[in-house]
Length: 193
Image (cartoon, rainbow, N blue to C red):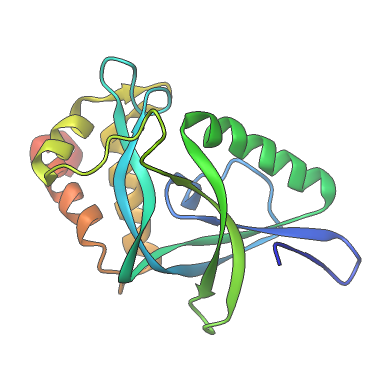
């Protein structure tokens, strides 16, 4: 169940973030815990024409796709109270849903104890107008290196995501993300320093 009652009878909502929500959720939350989405892989397949790109040069941002035997690391945020839940959902609609994502619920597993919970997340599907889909790592790195949006350069997004995943989940083996990071650091030597 998405919402549950806390001891003081406040409703709560669990939200799973696997991209920029990890370091910048943009909404108030009661607590957060590290977790994995089992059976999903993080991929830079979603185009972005506002935050990390524009109409001429869309950026690439993360989505998760179903892949057997893969896991995606992320953070589960617990949002408490009707007002905070509404504010968080409104924020996600503006930030994610209006940029091609849709709300879905999925089971996630807390890293510290293996407990499974159901959380709300945002996933970009192939049929949305911004979806760029798969490409070679070198092609994606070139697109990411040159795209820039209202929130800054696209490469900054990928490098921050890789940095936070590595710091929070040192055992994580997200080859797609880390290969992109390596290519970007080679393409943008200033960022490697």
